[in-house]
Length: 249
Image (cartoon, rainbow, N blue to C red; front, side):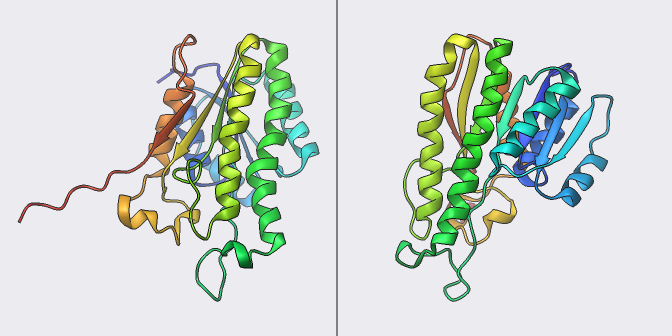
């Protein structure tokens, strides 16, 4: 397959889950992939499974650090000359309260937990978008997918105040930036995946009601959004699993 031959894509949170599945799918379609994650070990494992002629670059960087996101863009452009698409996927649901076996209720939410979630899911996304968009503006085109969450991007959930706030903000930020970037030939879209079979899945009670996506289900939707005709955009899209109906008695 060569749907993305010559395409350079940059993916954060690429050491596992949705980010890694997206790297695999894009690479199979001929894209040059740049994988960004904090864990060097996860990046090393990921790289061994990305076979094929298209180049692969791995960068151990932290989305919460603005300087790291500058390094991400600089290293990518030095290696490949441009960035065609940016998949801002890095995120966290935070820690789980050992006492309650659930994420924290707002009344008991430690500020350190709030900072972890907001710094990763929102500030990390802002740092990445700012640096990538400056490069794309110079190029005169580009594609950005900011990964939100369903239902957290649409409505708040108990024991997930910080996560819900961060993922609500992803939508607003992307909507605003999409208006700003349209004159520069840059398309920005938000994808809101439902519960997905990643380490963050555990403890999510929505799974029992709806089932769960696989990371490749989400990666397939990301590929669809990136390869839409240039005169089309979905703006925002939700993808979630549908539990099969119980067989008739």
